[in-house]
Length: 320
Length: 256
Ligand SMILES: Cc1cc2nc3c(=O)[nH]c(=O)nc-3n(C[C@H](O)[C@H](O)[C@H](O)COP(=O)(O)OP(=O)(O)OC[C@H]3O[C@@H](n4cnc5c(N)ncnc54)[C@H](O)[C@@H]3O)c2cc1C
Ligand SMILES: Nc1ncnc2c1ncn2[C@@H]1O[C@H](COP(=O)(O)O)[C@@H](O)[C@H]1O
Image 1 (cartoon, rainbow over the protein chains, first blue to last red):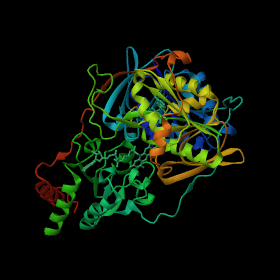
Image 2: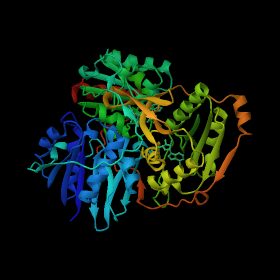
Image 3: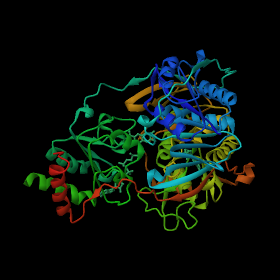
Image 4: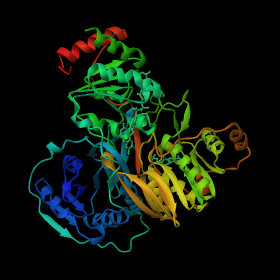
């Protein structure tokens, strides 16, 4: 029977929403499930984790783990992996995981497959599916099984509400961290500025992507937004270029929105954008590439040149 | 300050992708290539650091001979020299093997700062840089949005989820994985393009560096994704599409 170690992420006692998705992924593999959690507030988070089916929940308790650093996280996880000897280590693919998981894999000399959409076990070991080419291709990876394989799970790939409830005993251990290598010293998290636009309250949103090509062309989507009574938003490259303020960026590093209507214009549908808008009631995608991943999330899709389609929609809205 | 920038050449954005005959990668005939987007920002960040603090910018790129066009572009923009690890088939290497290869090349230079992109547009792993930091025993930071040098250490701004940020102090030598949008990209000047022709490009192989692929995670199959939830596609001329869409939004989805 395989042993699966899930590393849950928490902040001040609150579980990261992707932690339970990863627990669900771990449960789906069968076998014995161990959940580990670290950082200030870990004991509180462990209490909620104890409400799911697992063999045990392990709190990694050490003063150096209070505030996250990659150096301490890697040492602590290398320690718990040595202690628990899992075949598979699963982590939520969060910004924090991105920061330390590759270092952990390199430390252990073990394979890492990041941002997986599914994991499965067969006779030969672990098989992992993940997207490549920004979601335009799907890859199947097989991991070497002579030791633990490390896999990070994409946001939304597993459903948190399908994580099986149960009772798992919670234990606290003090990992030996030894000497920590050179490390970045973190400051306090902050927000850039007060948010001037609250997109989460918008009923309708029209979002522009790189398909609009030039700043001047934004007029076209502005007209559509006006005609629909919608707020304007954008994908990251538009905000990176300074064509729209950062506060209008939708996605993992921007805002999460769930309007009645979300119209994506010239947006390809990268996962970092999708996580920010997939909760919308009705999604319309306009893209000239019939294989654009955005159509997977759309309720209504229009394959076409936005410079023809968007003005036609505006004209039609104004007519009736 | 010696700065090493790792750049990857990837298929141009908006390429039409087809599976290769052996279903292990994409069919590369007729594709055009460019510098991976975040790597272009990493290069710009490196050039700016050199302009502010002096030193040298060395670019390192691993891949087949076609990669030399991206190396020339980086040199034309202002990089001083380059290392080309010329190898076919690197797309089949797992990230740790690739990181070992790049780390071995970096070791020959002992840079103060290594800049990588946050992730590649093709493999999209976001792993290679952080692994290199571990292999080289350096501190690192990821999702970097700003880089300053103060009193011999790096002060960087890191992006967190949902619009939050964090400042970090990073001792050198360090590896920074740079996010797109950190700066404004420059264009190569005519002068730069001319000068690039005379700049040094060291060509080496994985064997020269003593690195071999250890198949830890093997890509067994690459294919177009299986379409799961295809929404309703609206066909017709733009005018017909517009009319049908509005009808559906009004009466089916009740979204307007
Ligand atoms: C850590 C991290 C965080 C990130 N955070 C975010 C985030 O918060 N938000 C975000 O959006 N992204 C984020 N990204 C970036 C994300 O991965 C994608 O790169 C980005 O979403 C792509 O934006 P896009 O779809 O506008 O551009 P592209 O991917 O370039 O897509 C442009 C699309 O326009 C279409 N098109 C082109 N011309 C036309 C035309 N004439 N008519 C119709 N369609 C056309 C093309 O077919 C293509 O599909 C993040 C990435 C990372 C690594
Ligand atoms: N073949 C390569 N040559 C040079 N740099 C690379 C190569 N592959 C990856 N990198 C660097 O590592 C970063 C992360 O790549 P990845 O782990 O594939 O997402 C890229 O943005 C590059 O800076």
